[in-house]
Length: 368
Image 1 (cartoon, rainbow, N blue to C red):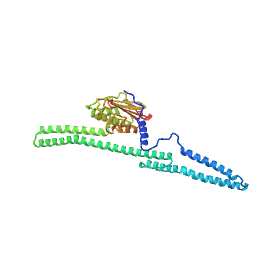
Image 2: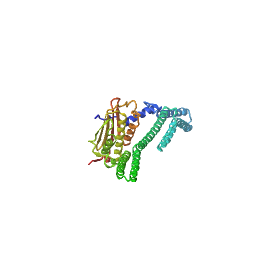
Image 3: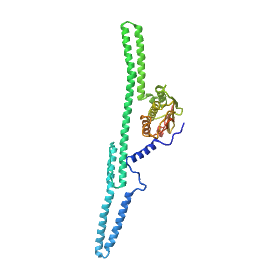
Image 4: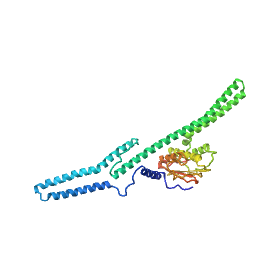
């Protein structure tokens, strides 16, 4: 199996953030910054020199009794000018810091619609305010996009459940009602064999309905995930949902010998479920390989198909196969503190690698 690349989702996100900040109007960082600090130091140095020169000039030919007053007057004038110039230079920075503080408090409350003034004469202040506004816009866009994907996922799940209830369960129950009517008619006609046959048919249909409802419930939350763990649940899912699908699914769970924390097992189950469903629907693959490894310090998952692949570099912001499956996978991995790497090229299949670190308390237990 190809070793996972060292490029992680976190690195990609940081690169994308830099590109989007630049596209949103943020200016690149200067090679030599702190011009504001240099201006303050320069102005104060010039004032000190001016006060010193003023004292020297004022004291020439002055009476000894007036020297103290002259020095005090020159120093006072210098202090006044220093205060004024420092206020003119540093004042805008103070106002911007106040605005940024209020905006951060607003973000802390969960309100991402924040904006600070970005029309500053100073380049550093303009760059800082523009970058902050670009960051707020990105946060707002990502939050909205995440909410839209969540709602889309919920609606899709509701449609799937409604479709299964209508196409399978509802029709089976309707057939059961028809059989019960036939059974009632047979009892009225004193046709015991026919009534018995219809009762047997009704029992078969009801048993089938129960199995269908179990599948729906297990899809919502596999109970066996809590009772038996990740590996048996994945085997069950692949057998019950993907058996007979176009691609051949090869599993390798020989090195998955540890039980994991419940939240990690749930995340890996959903990741595998979404990745396999995405590959079956869109990849046109003939073979999908699923490998799970659990170690005391980490757990890794690899899903590799030999399908048509896609250009991952050309469309990094969206699931290139037309849905939100891979985006959902990335979000689930990030919530567990893990990393995901997706490698694909047109005509060369797709390789999904997930690595989730485990702390000492999460290392799991050996399965018996």
